[in-house]
Length: 252
Image (cartoon, rainbow, N blue to C red; front, side, top):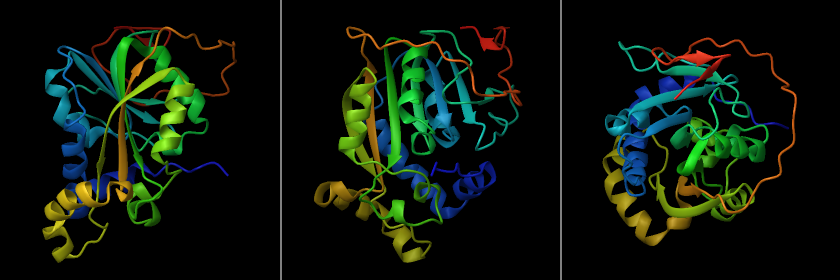
């Protein structure tokens, strides 16, 4: 059975809640530890990465928020020209080697074919481009609780994620973990989250709520290429403004 995307309405509601804001802060801190600066980079957030793109887009040349068709999309950034596009993750509307970094959040765990999705990301990344993946940890409590988005989809172990990256021509690099506090709405738990995050990273890292892995596009080993006809009927709902396009593909 294929994993179902979490609906865009539920994602927005979660990140507007107190628990969601605390989760975003914890994940953002862990992301910062693996986020090597690439001045004037072109960044794509795939899935629902909007809460995290806000923190990292200041140094970019341009930033896109690509949201899967099964999830739905919202306009972003708020009160600015839209940088959002509704996409299929196996057929991204971008030229080859046009993006410097891809951030996947609430994405890989819902992919119909994770390997095909990773091959498509490899295609659009520039030589030496970097990918950062945030996925639910199959050993963590968050993957077992369905009242947050991290409890939906297909969770991963670190070994599974590393194997997938290597199979699809990426070299795994820096790693981090986050969400060591339980996904509880109780005030006491939320007040203790900083201590739980600090001690959890030291005492029980294998039980984190999410795994974060950075990887680099590998060029010295080719992937087999097979022509495939699109299985999709795709009508964009929100497209990036200010970027010229040719036949539906954004130009760098």
